[in-house]
Image: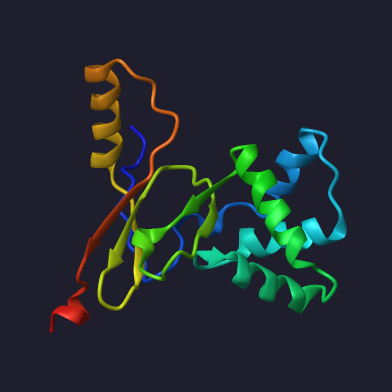
Length: 160
C-alpha cells in the first residue's frame, strides 16, 4: 500500500513549488510552440515562484533576469499557457481587487484558503477532497476535468 499523502498547509506558499523546473517549457516544445528567450524567462519565473504571482509580479521578476522582457509578452504568454491548459488563473476571492494570479497545474488539486482580513492565502490538499471529487463524478455521472475551490475565513492571527 502506498504511503498516505498528508494534507499540507503553507503560509502563502504554493504546494506545487517543488515540481520539476522546465515542465512548462517541455509541454510547449512538445506542442511545437516557439519559445523566445523572453518566454523562457517567464516560464522559469512561474515555475520557481514560491507564491502566487500576478502579471505585474511576473514582469518585475522577469525583468530582473532579462530587462528586455516586455509587458505585452507577459500577457501573451499567460494567454498561451491558459489556452493550452497549463496554468490556472485565480482571483483569490478578489481580496486584492481585480488582480488575477497564476499558477501551473499541480499534480493534485488543492483548495485555496484566504484570510478575509489580512489577505494571506494558504493552499490545502486532502484525501477527503479527492474522495469528494470521486463521489461527485459517481453521483452526477460527470467526468471532472477542472476544479477551482476557494474558501474565505479569518486566520488565527486575525481572530486574536
